[in-house]
Each structure stands twice: as structure tokens, then as C-alpha cells.
Amino acid sequence: MPIEIIAMKVATLSFVALLFSVGLVSQAFAHTTVEVEPYEIEVGWGVEPPVVGFRNDFVFDISEPGETAGLKVGIKNAFKNLEVTAKFGGVTKILDIGSDPRPGHYFSHVIPTKTGSYSIQLKGEINGVVVDVNIPVENVESTAVLDFPPTSGSSSDQDVVALKSAVSSLQQDVSSIKSGSGIEVSSEGTAYDFAILGLSIAAAAIILAVIALIKRK
Image 1 (cartoon, one colour):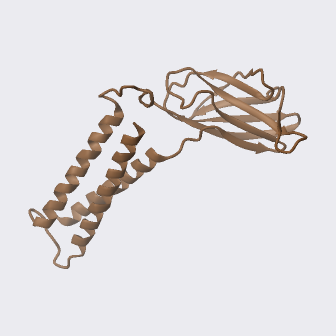
Image 2 (cartoon, rainbow, N blue to C red):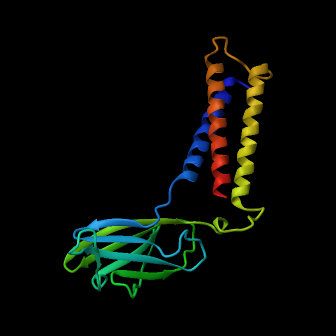
Image 3 (cartoon, rainbow, N blue to C red):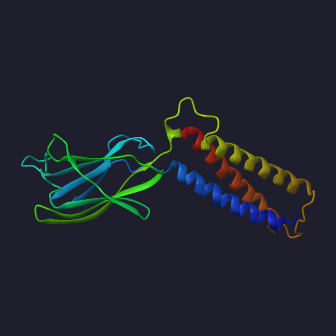
């Protein structure tokens, strides 16, 4: 196998593994707050982490500064002229909003049917103040995030096995390069150095991804 082919394989595995590990350790949005002067609008899930197939609520907290510094006052009837739309990819749904007994707190019942990224669009006005914002909320997770004990066939288990297999394959490539077995090495040594460096980076990235998966479980 020419060393140039191994180098291409290394570059691809490194890129995929790094993207995978970054995706695993990214932080959830949790509740997100935006300011539309003079109002502060906080949006999130009633139960976190949100899990696919389980009833939940989009919750809203709309307030403005009170007379005392640091004290916020909830806005009543905030959704009188404010339309709320839930978004998932290209799918949208206009929400019915209910009022919490606490002033400024509102909710909308929902059962998330797909994992992934959701957002809430608020459009209209609050007491004459124009509002037109799109607010991301925490990603909806698969039931694996709550499984106990974990199911043996979970996607996380399968991902760990796949990543460990990739590490084993990289180790075999390193051994082949060192022994010269079946490898066409350039006499100048540049391709050899690049392949060794690339293999090391790919192995490290995949190991990090495995660790992130294990911690997540």
C-alpha cells in the first residue's frame, strides 16, 4: 500500500474523529435569555434534559427591571399580541401559550418527536414594543441519556466499538510503516514523517472521542 494512500486515510479519520469529539463535548443551550428593551425574555424547556417521546413544556419568563436595582418584575398578558412558533429544521408549529400563576411566567405543552436542535420564534409586540427574535433551546436527546442500566444495543455502545476498531486499524498501519511490510516509502522521508504524524493525531482524536462517549454515558 503506497504511503500516500495511508496519509489520505489518516487525514480523513483525523477530521471525522475531531468533528465527532467536538460534537460530543459541546454544551447545551439550557435556558436562553435575550433582551428586547426594556424586556428580558428567557426561553427553555420545563424539564431538562429534554428527551424524545416524553411530554415536556416550552417555558417562558418575560420581565422588566423593577424600581429596586436588581429586582425584576414579571410582565402580565405578555402574549396578548405576541405569536410563538416552534421550529425544527424546516418544520414549524404555532404554539398555544398558557399562563403560570407567577406573573411573567408562561408555558406551552409539547412532546418532542425527534432528537436534535429546536428553536422558538417570538414575533409581535409587548405593550407596544416590537419583538422579532429567534431563540435556540437545548437539544432534544435520545432516551439513552436516561437509560439505567444502559441497554447493550445503544448507539453510544456501538459508537465506542467503532472508534476502538478505528484505533486498532491505525495501530496496524503504524506497525506496517515501521516494518516496511507492504509499504512503499519515499526515499526522501517526507511522506513517512507526515504519515507518522498524521496517524498520531488521528489516534489521539479518536481516543478523545471514545473518552467523551464514555463520560457522556
